[in-house]
Image 1 (tube, one colour):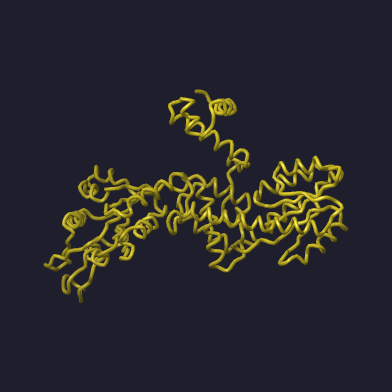
Image 2 (cartoon, one colour):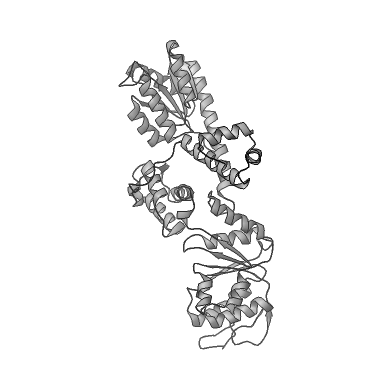
Length: 454
């Protein structure tokens, strides 16, 4: 199990009781006990130190004799960190408030006057439950967010791309990966190689746009000694080096037409001749190519061979830009935060709400490459444990929608799945109810709630 979060926050407006509780809990194994006296200081502590357990008195100023401020603090804490275990302090006459707090998401409550042994027992259980849930979330996120090594995704669009890669990995078909610059085309190509039967063979990449035209043929197919000025020895090309493995042709749209013809011949016959050579060399490679250009437009302009396109595009996979991958920007940001915080030996733990809003609302024209660059910069520049929008060089747009509450997120998800079920069943309520695993009356009630009509 990962390191257990033993940070405890006591939110109590009575200085004497606050001090007493802090002293009583300080000797719990590994515990770090923090204190706060009102809602504002409690939220500041939650944001800064991310305690796993909060002990919360409902009677906080400016309503010390009521529960309104304490309940508001509870909702704010759970809105920011839903996994936090909040334990409510309550007197015998405040049972209704305690029950209301539990209905709002509080973990448990304890009676006043404080029995330290009982409170320690409740806190200890809460710490271990928080740790267990954290481990489950971590394992679940690893499985959900990393369909392949190096790929972090949760959006339906990106998971669909990963599903296609998974399905074609064991076959020998040529795969063409398309997508904007910086979306991670080479990462997906490597994932394809590692999932294939060629995983023990080499993965050789060549960027067709980065090598001068007069050198690209030699780089691909190799050359014999004396083939041209400067060819002082025999050199093996990328195609030969990839024998038994995968050859990744990045930015294939930039390959010169003359070389396209030679590549096509290789794809048809699976033999090459080195520049200046006469011997045919048989090579066994799988071709994976990528481009950020529209190859069909290049074909119509006479800049790319149509017959080569169909050889390369036996299966096509499109990687959507980050701006079209709902939720992935924040997921990627958190991954890069952990990675660079560890690599750079920084104690940065998370992102402020304004940073999250800015990440979610930004268009990311440079895609994953830009996102990683900004996160690395922010990890270096951050003054505290949380990265702000200013650290990222981003600010949330005024029209960026507020982050949804759990209730709003559930309602939106429920409405979406209802609409999809009705669409798939051709608006047949009985069929839709069967798809959803509910009764027809239940489905009618849900349709009425969300104003969905047959």
